[in-house]
Length: 349
Image (tube, one colour):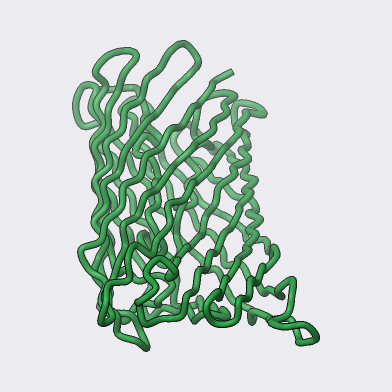
């Protein structure tokens, strides 16, 4: 049986708003916590969505490309205790309806961004069973640019809240088996813009909203010599999120389940590869004009090159984005896709 792991080898590459359930982008993984010894990593992802719809006339590509960053540091305290600090950008959205002047919606561009810092501790009860938990600080911010309506640019500064994270894992190291479940609680946010819609008028306030609770289940096991099976399920309670912005509302009639299944293969002491398929079922419900897709199917190819204490992972994802009809205006978005590329560099001390 194999004795290697490919934690995170199939890079968590987002695509566009609602691609991986709601506004999910990073998947909030905690794989760094299970690395051996003292470990640090940096990851970079670049996503190129191609999302367009028709409302009498084509909208043009309304989904801008975006960059996703991540990092982590993990250290053992003793044989039973370890901790990790993880940085990610868990949520996001971006639309730009200014690319096609004849499209019968206001010339609006909007972005939603986030940062997350997670501090986790892990306690090994014995060789096979461990528990982990900690706190996650999530900061949300946004911008809307209603150019054709009133020439207004609104910036919504950071709104932060703290969630708690708790989970457990079962491992059989001899066959590279690990089953881990992790729960993250919801966070609450609200924003006031940095300027009013016109001189002397009140600032625009985004009412309080919730970024949802979630559960991640990750599984891996050796299935043959130098071959690893990878699987995961992510549940996110998106029905608790209602986000009212100056250019529209984001809400959800269904929670999301994202499923992933893959195989990793060790070809030599220095190179391993991964093929992974990720699927999210469409809901059939009207989609927000700020996130006009529904469900997805993605294939990720990744390679891991190891040299001494350095591990470099590179991957590419091809994503088919589900068709959607937008609420309110009934624009039809179909035949959309995205490509994501990513690199992660890990260093073991």
